[in-house]
Image (cartoon, one colour):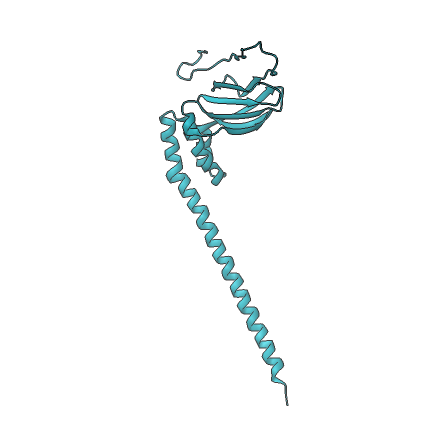
Length: 193
């Protein structure tokens, strides 16, 4: 007499392996569909909502608002050519240096600081090839042992931006250093203020 239990076990394991493989395939298929849907929804949001809004903000000269929205879009779909073009329209690439180096560099909207909320940290100087919004910004430069520098400025003559810090004890009593700077006015090419 033959033992049928061995055959039943083999059939059970074969059926179990087939069901397991089918479930793994189903999970992979669902994961692929979800991933595709998430990617599609991000691209669709960027193209249908963010990019037109960025253009409206740029047209209204709300450069910081356009920058903030374009930054969200580029973080979601960094390889999309339309989003990359929009990011280029809403920002410019700068290299920021301080004397001495190692200072924290922060920016926020010059015209609507309350809307912009807290300062946006760009990094510790020197900072190479950082994207910043067009327009006039409030800059804060901080380093331990030095006076915190807060200035307004933007649209510099070159992509190299520099700030000089002064030690806490270097200014005469009840006085602060006011840095000079050159400002290019976009509607008057060739005119510097």
